[in-house]
Image 1 (tube, helix red, strand yellow):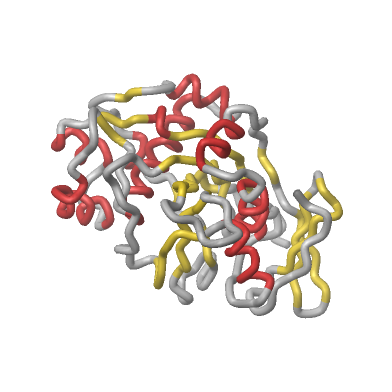
Image 2 (cartoon, rainbow, N blue to C red):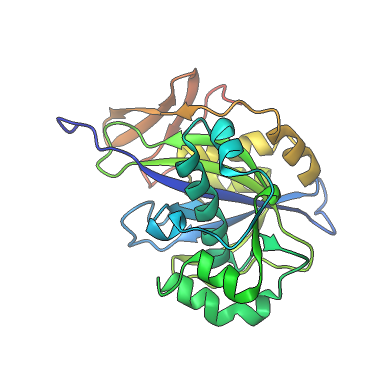
Length: 274
């Protein structure tokens, strides 16, 4: 553990959800979009995650318009100041567009297929979300987001994030895609199916992803998840870690029965959990 813990960087993660038009036998309709990150990446390489990333200076730019709860309202919901809350919401919308091609903006249904160059400019950091929205005559729609959780990387980690987890239903007329260099594959999963693949060792999950899949898997469809988000208490969750030989075991401070291995090689055995 470092002498002084690394200060976590703010980040935003988005759980894109939908209802499968023709659910597989034995599955409820709810699906969530997951990406398997490139193995060589500095953070969470090879892991299967929800789309998202760190807040950067672009996310603090003034937007041409904003529909839905304002930054002050989000600050109350996320337990942070209004400036950071606004940046987190911008980062959530920007990262979702960069990584999945889904744009949480309006009015109406954005012609996302016509914004390929703008998406590329965002990814290359040649433009900000404000630039893209202004050029397309759109405004950010924060009403399409719901707060789900805040997860903070364990204190002992050399690279730390304080990540706001949001939930969003894919807007009608849009499709999430896998056109990102940060992932080797991206597709829709039933939450229980993803957990089954983790259990068999076919998928690597970090504790926040595992826990969130458990939580949303308790709901049958996207409407139920969005409704549940309205009533969740958002507070920072900081897992604790301990070593057992070559394995790193992650424990949640408010649930000592929950344990998951993060050795990146084999699945752990969850405890009581959610």
